[in-house]
Image (cartoon, rainbow, N blue to C red):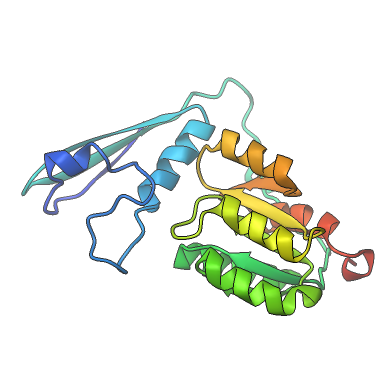
Length: 214
């Protein structure tokens, strides 16, 4: 168990019950999407863990993160580190991710692998771009949970423009039912967040034209 404690203003009781809900936020419009704690919750659930929170207004909050104890032998840091090796990708990727920090870091990873990246923070803008530039785009990397135009509708709109579009889904928390439904709609794969550069390359590479991978 790991606890994270702060001495801030605390959380009001009505908000405390909803802090792990996707898109719930007490920030003003445009200041945040409320996906941070939802991603924490999903990551822990995906690793068979749990998270709890206690808070007192005016005194701060405590988040306690629980993870199962491993009975296996720990690998060394060198053995467990994933490396992208010498794989180079040369395709065009349309990245659709509303969380600015995740969008920027993912774009940087793709560019480090050799991809050309165009990134959008909402599905509607991405679809409009895709309608004009779809002949130049090899892969669409789509976040599974998006405000505004939902990811299912984004996928459907992309496929209306190009029925053969290669869409890779990504999510930071558990949404197996939605992912399965979108895979049935024609998405090409699903990737859990957070992911390493090697994992990203391993998912993107097979979706690119053979000439774009070296």
